[in-house]
Structures are given as C-alpha cells and as structure tokens.
Length: 273
Image 1: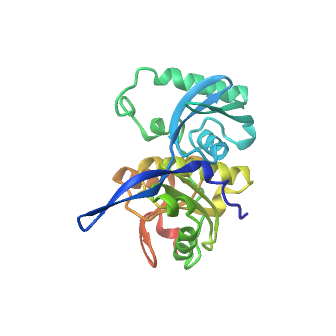
Image 2: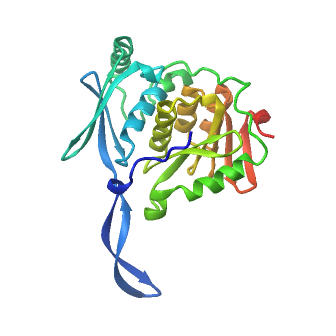
Image 3: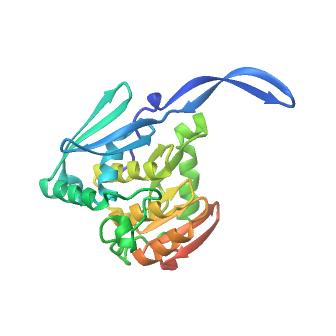
C-alpha cells in the first residue's frame, strides 16, 4: 500500500519577500503554504468549517468523520463531493441516516459551550464525543529499527514542507518502519485526519501499522488515533501531560522525541522492542 498524495500545486504559492542577512536586504520570492476554509457538510447540514491546506480534502473529510466518531466505518460514508467556492471549499457528504441522527443529537448536546471548548466536560469520554474505547493490546508491536527507518523515509517524502517549511506531516508506517502513506497540512490534527482517511480509503487495517507525526503529541492526536484503533503514535517532539494520560487510558503506545536512534516511550512500552 504505497500511494503518495495528490498534486500539491494548489497548496502553495509565491510571494515577494525582503530578506535580511548581516544587515543587508534583498528582494526575492518565497514559497508559502496555502490554507483555506473547508466546510464539512453532512446530509445538507453544515457541521464545521476547518482551516486546512487544500490538498487531499477527500481524505480529510473521511478521516475527520472517522476520528470524530461521526461514522464508525468508511462504508457509512455513501457519497462525497468537493465543491469549490470563491471563499473556500465545501465538502458535501451523505452518510447513513443513523449516523446523521447521532450527529444532530451531539450538536444539540454541545449547544451553549464556548471558550476553550471543554467547558462542562466531566470525563475523557465526553471530550472524544463518544466512548474512548481501548486499543487491542495484541496489535502494533514494532520491529527493531522501525522508528529510525520511518523517520528517514518520511523526511524524503515531506514534499510541501521542503517547499515551504510551514506544514506538519503524518505518516502511516508498517510495523517494520516502511512509510506507506504521507499526508501534510498546516494543522497537525488535519494532517492526521487526512492520513486516517487515506488509510481507510485504501482498505488498510489500523492495527497493522503506526503513525509518525512531525509535530508535538497533543491530546487530540492521541484522541483521534485511539478513536480508529491505532496502537502506536510516535512524534518527533514532546507530548503533553493530557496526551500521556489519554494514551495510558486508551491503551495507546505514545512515543515522543523520536529522533534518529533516540526516543522516549510514555505509555504502554510493551509494543516497543
């Protein structure tokens, strides 16, 4: 399962820049990553507008739907169409009636929440919007050298990052570290949603690999991974305390500071050899 993402032509542009070096300024052109609003519409009902890099929006919408518990399986997403507007993109989806009813009920329960978005939440299950579940302890055991191999392969495939320096990447890796899919986005959680959607679209099993992120490991990264059954999440930077606690509760092996031959395992180390 080795598939690169779509063309990145619409995901970056050229801008003028004044570069200063040792007190001297020169005019030049620079590549910058684009971000656009993308409205996620379910059965004609607008659920959320996300700022995202405008590539792989089909993967993003499917991955978001799975990681947020809007649907339980990819087959519950019946139709998907990306409609371009002058002000952004609209992803129109048709999902199973039972799932849409659940989504509407969830929206009613969330009415009135403001600010941090967690006000009034009393448990980790409520943060996820559905029961968190527990990742199968028998899945996701990494082979020796998998992390260092994945890092080397991912670096070579961060195409938009090499152009702009402004995006995160999420990689789906086999248990031996071979990188099978890469998705990039200005938002780390968007990159992961795109990756989850791509894995699901290609028929992958979430227990048969691991995720490598070029960002820190914050709680929403662990939350989204646990929601679909990903057993191992590795990040090149630090985790947050909430991410560690969530990973411990969900049975996810959380790895931080994955750099070369060095890494720190914060939860469920039995999967790392």
